[in-house]
Image (cartoon, rainbow, N blue to C red):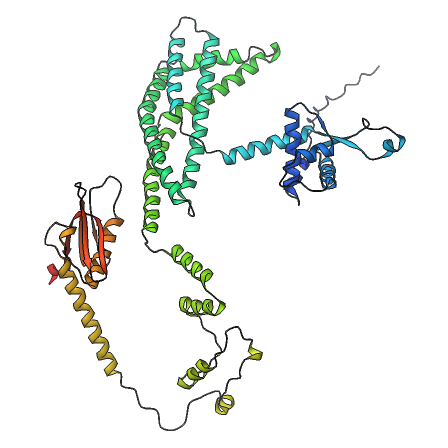
Length: 525
């Protein structure tokens, strides 16, 4: 007899996981996607009300009245498409069969499939995450302190209770998770609020005051309670009490596992609890070369306050009439809309942008007179416009220069002299205005007296530069003019008095202030 030994067979490879089918999400990327979303939501709402099957007329009645298709056939087609994609299941509707003809007629009732329900749950989570604003939960900080103190009490017992340890750690983890998630969502929404441009000014200004108070209150709580939490965490870790607590929670969590899986389940649970505790500790306690998340959050919140104030300052500048490019374009668009006809719009276009028709080659006095007498609309096609007279010499040689003696060089001396006189006169007027406005020390606005137009324009520019540096809570500010020739200091008066500055064009009124205007060029001279 001969014995044969067979080689041990290699272990079979585990079967590959089945491919994931994402067909139920097809209705999001096809035409009529809003209708498909309404239909699937109608089935989800019906399931919450314990209605399993819906007929086409039920779905049609459940849709929004404003966007509901007028014909029920559109709903039937949408239902059939959702059945093909796996969102719904269609079953023959025999409940309304009263004759043989009804039996052969195509009638179905529809039900949401597991894949369709999972797709709707995923979309609901997606919409909720996008619309979530979050919040800074100061109450969660108090709860974390309470649970950490409870853990200190539990671990101090001779035989700590696993149930108490598990409950305390579970509540601690839940509150910390809510705090971290909400803080991240809130700071993201806050940054989007700061970055808004076309925003209702009054609504933002009213929201700003409440938001700044909210941030300041949370920052104060984070400083005090965050430090207390860090001390409690350090007290637990220094005495080596964290490991036994996590072990008790892991044993409690794995208590219902089968006997053969108990050890593995306990190890997995312990690793999970250790990761949660590590995340909590790193969130509140800074390490070597690493700042804690609480410190970073505090810095982000502190930095958001001056950013909000900067947005407020920009909005106030717009309301006060300070010019910026967006405001200029909006004003120009309003002028175009209010123009009486196309001819006025064309004139406004040419004045605003300096773009003219290229129909001319040379414009002289005769050309302008002719066009004034018989204007040529800018909308006239080239084929229907009057022809241009071109010299035969230009057509033949490509040059319009005449042969012979060159023209005399024009004398621009008179024009330069005239420009120099104008510049000198303007410089003298500005100098007189600076000397007129120099106060020689702090004086009341009401003591400035009457100002001529040039001095008043310079005064308004200085006042605008000073107000642009104003911040909430300030009582004194200082600024330098754009050309560096003047310095202005402005101080608030609390007596409620009003100031009047008279000019040839009217009276300028406002709250009285102490103003000190210094002519910096006088020191140079």
